Structure formats: structure tokens, C-alpha cells
Image (cartoon, rainbow, N blue to C red; front, side, top):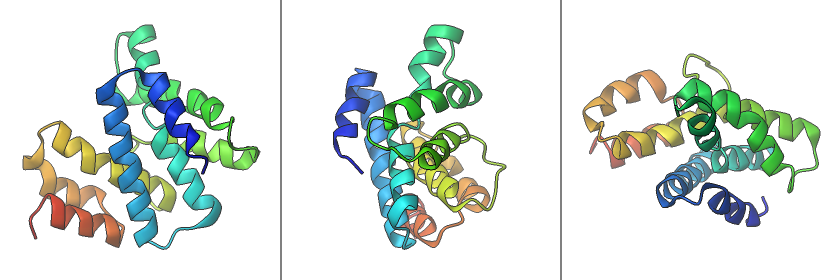
Length: 160
């Protein structure tokens, strides 16, 4: 992954909270991917998707007055593909990045390892930022699948 994409993300948001959130999700996604032995193109796709997962928020607020998950997904996918396109010249990878960003709040989707990593990384951050630690066990039981994501949840949020 080209690390200059991080600069693009920060410049796009121009908002410390959104940038900080994204960097946390990006870091957890990298950690989960490493723990699950994800490498190569799949790892790169996860990294770009994590880095650009919330780019639909500013557009959603501007166009719809909302940053709701479905709006983020719909508006964010093409923006993420455009931003990642500066660094990724593989059309299939760009499509997958767009797919992940376009479904990162679609928790009913099961069995897609790269999307699962993004779900788990985003939840780890959202539970803390949203002060929803009372929902940590429920989220662990319903959302977390990867062994590494479960380990992070147990050690960081469930104190197990």
C-alpha cells in the first residue's frame, strides 16, 4: 500500500475526529489482517478500504444532511474507488475496495473475510467513541468472527 494515501485521507476530511477515527480503524484492520495471516492483494484491499471507509460522511452531510450508515455506503464507495485509484491500477482491486466501503455497515453479510476484518476494526473503534461499551459483549457475540478480532475485543474492551 502506498502510505501517501494516508495524507490524501487526512486532506480529504480536514477534520481531526474523522481522521483520527479512520487511523484507528486502519490500524486495527492491519492488526486483524496480520493476525489472520492475510497478505498480498487481499491485505492491500483491506488497508485501502479501511483508510477510506468513511469518505461518504462529508458527502452524506452535504447532500442528505445525514451521515447514516446506508448513506455513507452509497456515497462513499465511488469516492473511495477514486481516491484509491491514484495508487491502485488493478480494476478488480478497486472494485473490491468500493464494495467493502459500500457495505461496511451491512453487518448481515457473512462469510467475506475482508469485509469481516473491516466490520471488526470499525466496531472496535465505534464502541469506544460512541461510549457504547455496555454493548461490547453483545457486539462480540453477534459481529466478531476472526480469532484476532475476538482476541482484541476480549483484551481491550471485555477485560478477559
